[in-house]
Image 1 (cartoon, protein in one colour):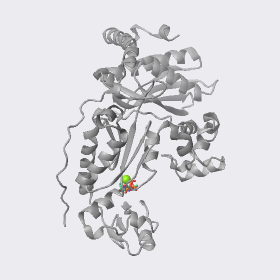
Image 2 (image 1 turned 90 degrees about the vertical axis):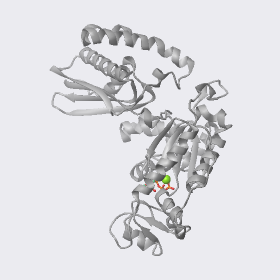
Image 3 (image 1 turned 120 degrees about the vertical axis):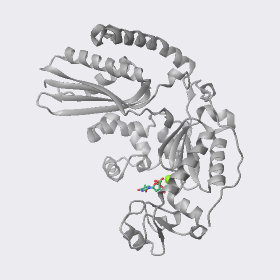
Image 4 (image 1 turned 135 degrees about the vertical axis):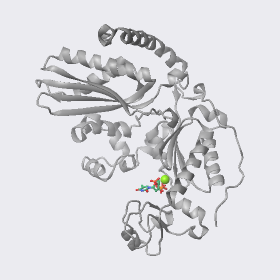
Length: 421
Ligand code: TTP
Ligand code: MG
């Protein structure tokens, strides 16, 4: 038997997000509210929806019984037996002999996914899909329209269920990391909201493994350092963790403290290009710090100019460093705000360089690139608060003038080094 979606309530899509409606904190600053939504047992739920015989049964999607292959996903009923995504089918069969094994029907899941994201976009235009069944929504500007963030979450959950016959779990917080944590909090069919007040009592006591990106191996290493909860990690010094995990160590602590980029990048705003970068091989290997400094400036200016020309901003800065013996290193950092200014790229690159450069070693090549690109919404006058707009105006004017000069007379016509010192 096939399943037909019922007639549903229609409400107008939200066209404009009004940043002035951002949630105001007691200290007068505005705070973003980010929603993370993840469908429950997605492929298995689609199968259960379309075939009522499968409902409330341990359904394992990935392949037929006795066939080679791995489990894509399974219903929550199958999870009670210990079946998991990625597990070989024979193991799933051993754990759950009564399981109903079915092969995946990709097109059906893609169709369901498209419908799910169509629903999300009715509530906010800023929707960033991150996989077939999950996405981030920036709901900051839409809260007043719908009454409250809880109402937005409840309405989305209801609409997904009423129209598609599927359940999802919703999490809301002031940044992406905690929003994702919230959506994983009460699965399936859950809804969790974290505010800043929840950080210490509700987020910090959670096992560190709950943080997105912390797998079994990292967890083991953290346990050896007596870090068991998110709070334990947040309270450590980034520099201490850097000793054990390299640059990732700093990032781990930032994650635990919720210092992630809050920006949700709508799919249609994503540029086709992945990164913008430039590098330079010196005519002779270089030891002089000023020569390296000047080259970083020049490369950052080139990168900045290309970014602006294309109307992009980016949040990841990566540098490349090759010593005279060809030993090559790259080093990157993800910043909370999207950047496009020469000065910001330059200072990020300089910082990254000084993090890794071993003094006394002659340098053959350096490079700078910016990735994690998004369309520069500033150009569209959207999403930025008035004060930010004004802050950016002067920088933008300077950049435009310099870009025009360089376009006309070439890269070396002018240097902004005096602006930076
Ligand atoms: P997930 O959201 O990770 O899993 P899920 O939706 O099945 O279950 P949960 O309730 O825990 O969110 O992945 C979404 C879909 O992606 C999943 O239904 C099947 C597919 N998938 C695979 O094919 N292989 C995998 O290893 C994983 C993790 C998912
Ligand atoms: Mg899911």
